[in-house]
Length: 68
Image (cartoon, rainbow, N blue to C red; front, side, top):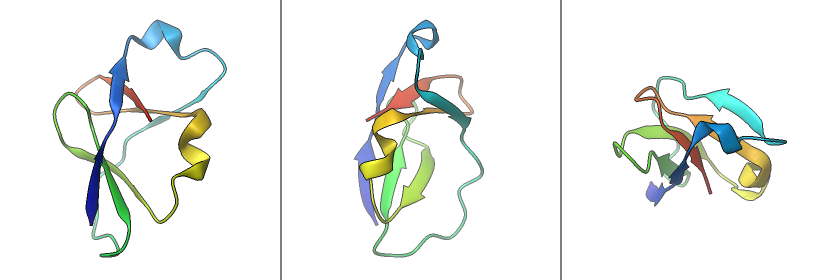
């Protein structure tokens, strides 16, 4: 899996984006992209395609908000 570090930003700027909480990272496909929190480097999301992440904000368990 290829790790992709996400950008963190203040939560008050979530605005029109969709906010989701990061789930527990399970076993992902070896060809999937692995998105990691920009603050704590924990894997917060795995996916084959990153196109739908443009309007998505993922809140890590450490409390940071992440986006591409």
